[in-house]
Image 1: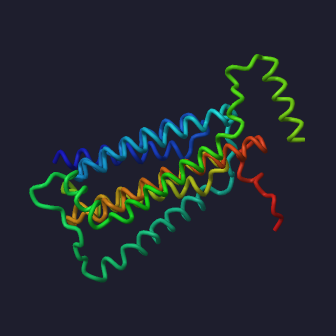
Image 2: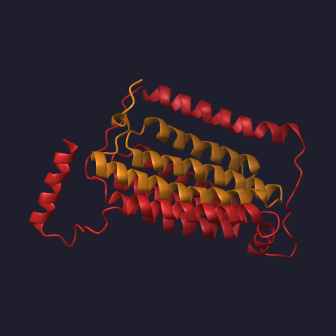
Length: 190
Length: 102
């Protein structure tokens, strides 16, 4: 009963939040709605008994990814209204629903046709984080290490890409200096 | 209706995925496009967690973890590239990113 109420409540909340993210013209609204949607998604993980995944979702998505986006938005001119494609919205909606249904069919078809076999059963008597740790450090150890290396590579790439000209701080420059830098940037653009 | 099964979660996952797909199709601003891809990844995560719960198998949760890791690195690299592009061209509009004529 309570599970059903929680499910429908959070389903509606996430769908509305993500819809706002997708349709709004304000970048800041989109960012906040996305952050809220991520938190509501973690509620599903808690309902499903995947406690560790829910905590990771909150920490990584709303903590790290959203902070990165908020940081990135400071670089871009987000006060300007976003221009969007003005194609037929009906066609876009129909196409997206159709393709989503196809994607689900593609992935569900093998599961339906063959009998699903449990390969990493949850350990009895262990909490979710315990069994996740046991599976992660035995069966999925190599992908786990590869993911760590991938994150390191991504971190270095992010620093190298975004860190250029970081020695020039807009907050420490005077008003004239900022104007001069802006002029120089305009000239480069032209 | 009151008993929440795997189908409910899969339908929810599909709905969220189509919302994300809608965003990918209609957004012109690259930052907004990134938001839409995050929605796609989250929708898939919900499906994985639901299957993991209803089949009593932890593999789905493992895949969700790796998807989260991939999303985090995607954001780091993508945002870095976006900042470089914005410094060079002054905008992040998808339609103006056409240096190749085809």
